[in-house]
Amino acid sequence: MDDLGTGAENTWCPGCANFGILNATKKAVKKLEERGVGRDRLLMSAGIGCHAKMFDYLALSGLYSLHGRSIATAQGMKLANPDLKVITFVGDGDSLGEGLAHLMFAAKRNADITVILHDNGVYALTTGQFSPLACKGFKGPSTPRGSIEEPFNPLTLMLEAGATFVARGFPGRQDHLVDLMVAAVEHEGFAVIDVLQSSITFHDTFKEHNGLVDELDHIPDTIDDARVLAVRRDRLPIGIIYKVQRPVYHTELYGDANPVARRKPRGERLAAIRTLITPRKK
Ligand SMILES: Cc1ncc(C[n+]2csc(CCOP(=O)(O)OP(=O)(O)O)c2C)c(N)n1
Ligand SMILES: [Mg+2]
Image (tube, rainbow, N blue to C red; front, side, top):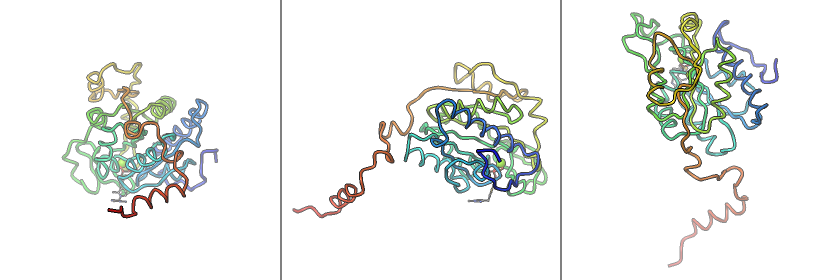
């Protein structure tokens, strides 16, 4: 067991790309430490699904959330203690089905969190139903004749919602994914990495993606250029597709206050409550 492992038995299918995401995350945590962000300042949340087992296998503090509520949980943690860097691991069913509104509004308000989207285009833990990112024609137990719907494009959705850091990564390009994770955590604002995950059992896209990914050599200058990259299907650009600086939610809400660090002593808090509930004399 390495020093970021937990010793928990791993139940992912052998060959699952989630192993690549876990390894990349561990490397990213170590890089962040070298760059001054200690693991005591990193906090994670996870949804429910195969992706969410990141929580079981990664020795970071955090909260195992509900299905679709991981992003809301992450925002709460950041608001409670803005000195922390919060990473949330979400599935495509988790964040674009059950929790779509949380994803969209977190991007809209530029919540200062990092979202790692395990994009396997399937509900993997529940054994292969089609998901919001399942490709048209995808066959599974809930779509035996093939899905008749087009999937969402998570990159364009995030660009339109107001995300200030939008990237795509591929576990087969491990070092590249590590650097993306480091950049996403260091970004001040809402950062999302769409990770082309591939579920070896229910939606194996590894070879296809491996042949299509191209590492970007620069960050596009405008959102229009980002949109062009985001909709490409002939090739799959990986890297930072869009990055811009905008005020973040917690500072807009309460400046540089930190509710945890600057909490008043218990006695003072009780006195304030007493004042509030004591009837005023007429
Ligand atoms: C509120 C709620 N609805 C449904 C479920 C059942 N459920 C558990 S995991 C899952 C799908 C997970 O798919 P995804 O988020 O894509 O994660 P993956 O397993 O593919 O990583 C579902 C529907 C649940 N646990 N809670
Ligand atoms: Mg999934």
